[in-house]
Image (cartoon, rainbow, N blue to C red; front, side, top):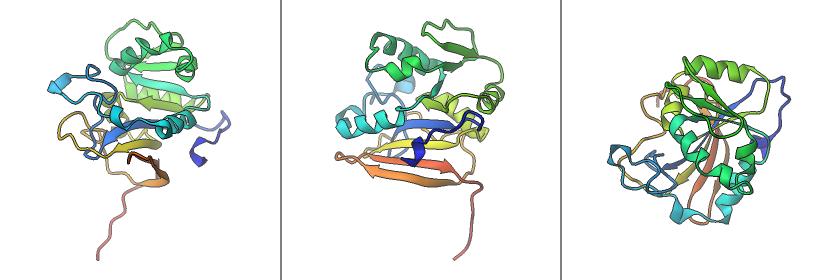
Length: 209
């Protein structure tokens, strides 16, 4: 897969957003009813009926080489309460360095965790300019808005589910800027989930008929 080629550490690290989204762009609480009920969100766990071996293989491919994690506070706390206690399933996540963006001090209970405070955008720019594997962002809806606003996202690895919810936190919300992307890969699961991966591709082009 072209998306998963390993790059020498001397090249700037890519920042890749992995997200489960609905047709209307909702990304809130894909994994369970209690994951994030903020705003009265009542559809937590909406991805579960669409899980299958195909999606499992896609995730295994996308997490099958070294990477570091960049997470918002809420997603970090959800992950830290689960993955350290499931070492076989979560080996890649447990081995990654976890960079956590938080405005407030917090206790980092998961091994190999680093707190980013202050100007998150500047901290992420420094991370991208340093050595190491690519940075993957999972969940972390508020953080993603900051990353989009500052044009720090290099690739979007999306899983688009065949439902609309009409409410909830959206991937492309207040942080979105005009930006062009190139489709690098597209596949469809047996249950109708579109796996679409995009690479940042300059400015938005316009024209006239």
